[in-house]
Image (cartoon, rainbow, N blue to C red; front, side):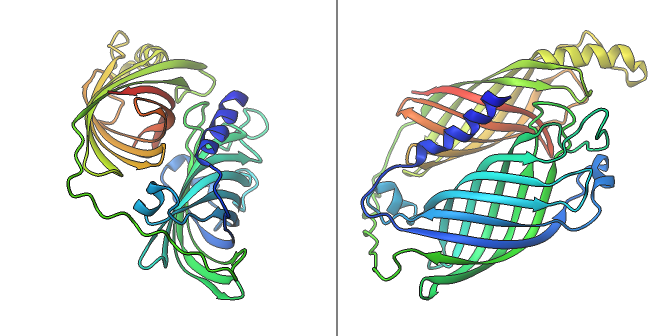
Length: 364
């Protein structure tokens, strides 16, 4: 697990680069919200409204690189997060995230996308804390999406902001239990811009190339890792998900995908056999084929060498009736070369996480 935490934390650091005369801003936000009761398994853990803080450092971009102006000069940086769940069984949460800020509406609307690692102060323990079915690990992946309306540098570098966000904490089925939590909240805060006396100019965006064209590309990806079934203590097993898909880039920033997945899981094979033999009333064939085939559509947002990749799939071959027909994948990719990429992502079925996937692939 320590190796997984290290890799998750190290991967986003690849997006940080050096440039001349950087400018930084700092945010401090307080929030108050609710944990969504997405599963009956966590109803007993939702006792009050959580509250917490975000502390963020942002590095601004001004168009020194082509992708910066193309994406309307985003910021990137690091966020520290603390959440008081107001429940001793559930414990509190601390997180460290890498993020991007994207701007709209004359740079007054900010959308932050962040991925990182969270620490639970009181995860599940079969003797000491058996009621916490939300988190099975001390450390887990976490993601948040934040929408803020802001006014920068109102007075002496100080600005204000207000908005809403959704933050997701989950073991990604690295260990069971893994019911997870989703917190939605309203937040408000202040920000400070360093070196605010010096006016920085944005380098104008290049003229739109109406003749942009790139042919269809073929991609192959191997996604692997370990996961555990919903039966607590059943053990972790490796999985191998193989993807083949075509993508068509419609601009320098966006492409659409169409492809298929072959999903192979030793855990799933054991689970089918166990459920079929232990619960005959469910009419599950213990010898049913554990393999699945899915067809999916996707989108890829290119940010320098990093890209953001959501996909939506449907199982066209699945002999285990306990699964949902539709699945989702949300991932980050880093291009080591124009033809080779690595990354990680979360495979899930609705609000139910299935696996944290580490990806190695080629784009031809």
